Length: 132
Image 1 (tube, rainbow, N blue to C red):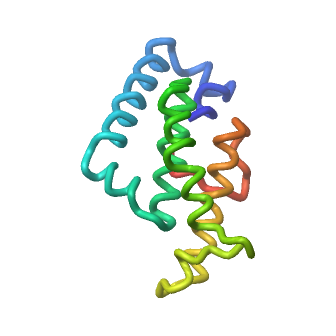
Image 2: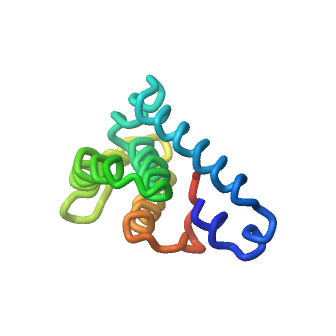
């Protein structure tokens, strides 16, 4: 989302109305993602799906500069999820028993890298895939 508003090619094509409409759509989606049964379910999942939820929700909140939602996500979800999912040795125990454990470890690690990029306001790392 940040790339849409920072890319010179996009800025030349998108009007102020386009940008405002896109921000309004993202705000509506964020509200749905937080309040809907699907969003609440994803938020409660304790493995890579929960990590992906955090990345998506936090990316939308920071894009919208909604510091209240962003702070709530970090306080309520992100810190606890990091503590829950990454143990003292650096392994991801919530992914250990899965059918494709290696793939889930890689996917969750990518989500945590994406989360770090969103939290730090950094551009997307070229080796990571943002869902939003």
